[in-house]
Image (tube, rainbow, N blue to C red; front, side, top):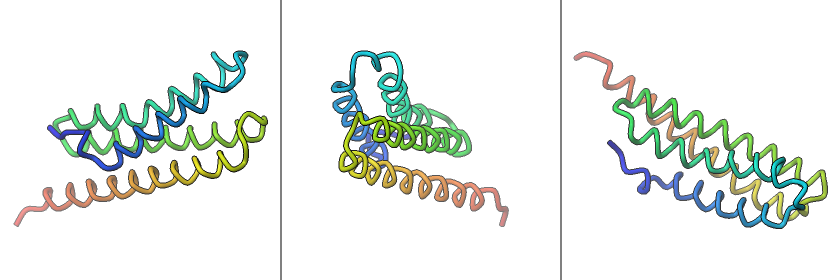
Length: 126
């Protein structure tokens, strides 16, 4: 069993989640159960899936949860773009958070590739 708190990508995802919560706290109350809630849930899902995956027995299971984290990161990216286009956040804020989310996505892709490589190395018989 892995310790999710030691994963650099989890740390970045956690910081992103905190930023999303801070950002959405300024959204209009009409968005409380709409975009704000959706963006918060997607951001939480990135780190939560990593944590859950760390509790799985196999690398294949862990990899599946890493891939779900990447999907949630794409969802957050979409919500940020929508928030900018609706005038809820500035272009500068969207660009800064977009940089952060893309860093998390790159790290998740790297972790997925590492796990795939490890899986192929351990499945070979000498």
